[in-house]
Image (cartoon, rainbow, N blue to C red):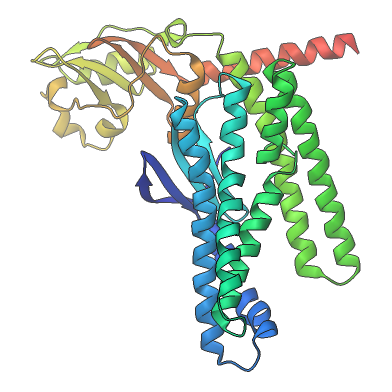
Length: 376
């Protein structure tokens, strides 16, 4: 899944929490509906600023509840050796970007169930607080809202519609009896059906005059329908790429030495290899890299007579050539990289290009489509 226009806010347990710009719209909408509708209907005749204050705090606590839900997924995944680099919070909730598919159905089940368990725990905690707190106080409404929000979050996510948590639980059960790709296909079909059902409910709501609810249901239905299709395609791509190691697809080249003219790269090697990252052996024998984008920013007179070592630098993303293509491709997508250098024991091995991986995927998918058409 790709989340656009997101901004990192902090890192916890090695996982970066990001907020998508769409979440701000949800925050405003939730605050408005609570301040102008939910709280005034339960506790009338209070000053408007009290409603807005409690509504804003409620929206923040809802954000924290969703975050704890996603962190639960992440911590269980990390415990089972599955890296989780990012959590994204956006208009429809949150998603933990798990780097790779679980190796076993039982691990999938544990990772998927962890989020709803956390939400049920929070719902129970807030229900207990609401039970003992005075009923005629606005803060009781705040606590009740968080109880209802966490309960709804848990129940909604348990619907067996992939890629919701319930869909992942369904996939883990099917996976124990079938292969992963077939299990994902069946679970994602439930996701598409559920998406259509929400769109239908939204249309009915429109007919009865509930325009905001109807619009929300339609947007949510379209999102789940698209996400289910994307999740199945992502699993299929992972299945294809897991068959290959990165070292089978590397563009190989001889590194420059630190005292060679930098023009050797710009005028000779770049036009030939078309790689935007080029290895350089430093005077200490380490591997650093020339970046084409760095050099093109400089006027030509600053490059005249200069050596490769003057501009070579460490690169943030380096690949082990023995890795399968799945993690490499996901890293490229997440960080918007066209290429990644492969290094083994301080020895440059080659450059992995994203378009090479995407050509491999296209060829597989085209062959599958041709086979299915021929069988039809």
